[in-house]
Image 1 (cartoon, rainbow, N blue to C red):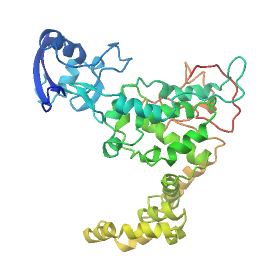
Image 2 (cartoon, rainbow, N blue to C red):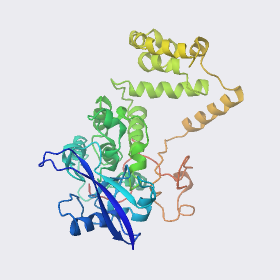
Image 3 (spheres, rainbow, N blue to C red):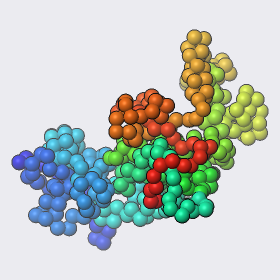
Image 4 (cartoon, one colour):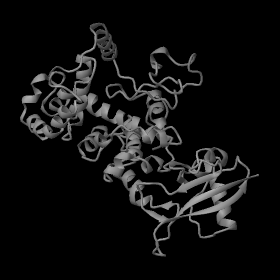
Length: 394
């Protein structure tokens, strides 16, 4: 047994008092969970403590809270590990707070309906059947079902929503959880409205191009769903496969980014803005839309010049890397763009029991940057016939 101090954030809207913190002492084995400690406090010291929980096995996602400032499942966080990162650096104090970006109902209970589930409903979270519906079953390629397995692992705990920086700035942002759910059906060849889903999310000012690539949702997710990765995949399919040019200039911005790296080896920031609004070429800056953006950016440019962050010469010509390095960068582009089909990195599961022996070589490309070293599965190919695997209920 060991003694731990739980510092709980308390809030009771019916009392009319402001939120405050209250400390409780609990004696439990170090391997026990934070949830068990909270329930022990509730049972033995203060029955008014509010906490939502159900399975206690890291499956239902109900007990999502912030532990020492980071989102997590209370039932899946051991006391000894939580105490090591405690707020008082004393090895025994654990701070527990409700999740962020959602209204607090009481203590550690947040209103999931007001934010999380509302955004899930926004992306039409069900399969829209292609017609005609087969008499027996849909036949789906194996790799397509492997591809959506990662998003299907979501337990709807809301941890990614809690710490999403984009949602903190823009509460209307569709959010990481809903975006991952959207990819579940965009990546399913049985769905009849892939284009409509993508166009809807691309055109929405608070849609997939509102993500700022902060990686916070990837760190927060307890199940490896990697919501930000799913957002990037939605963008790639929308831009590369369906050529959806959105009014948010998201697709133009990404295209300009890619071409500038190819041409310069580094990002030419002075060209990025005009190309994103005026067209992906040197002449883009003469487009009226680009000119307006450049005029609005003059105060920022003036401050940059005044502080020495860049010079007029570098702004005009951009940074350049040695020719040999630039040639190597272009060789990467040629190799990737020369493939017959695009491969999506799915680092959650490869889909094969023995990756080295059972998987066909062409289906297991190298997973560049894969933290767990697992190979990736091919992503959805809109041009491939949708036939060859098992059925799966939506």
